[in-house]
Image (cartoon, rainbow, N blue to C red; front, side, top):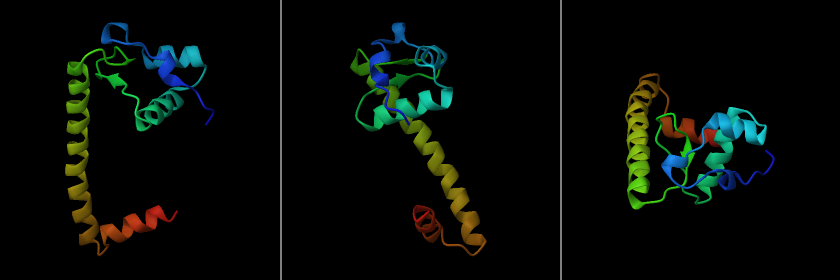
Length: 108
């Protein structure tokens, strides 16, 4: 993946949010790469918000915007963990050890 400083294209404040489509056009990359670059920046400590309301990405201007993103991320993570519980049960019912399955996946 070519290095793009995606955070320099993302404005401050929800009112100035930029959509994924606009980032695609400006950077001449597809949606998948936009999301990868945003995720890479987030993993590097850059706070990038997206309220999932169609307005797009923005850097927070207030602690309330950060709090809203935190709650949204937490809700999404909890939903995934609930799904994991059911998947883990199915794996165990099939005679597989989910921890072993994860170790095998990490070895790939």
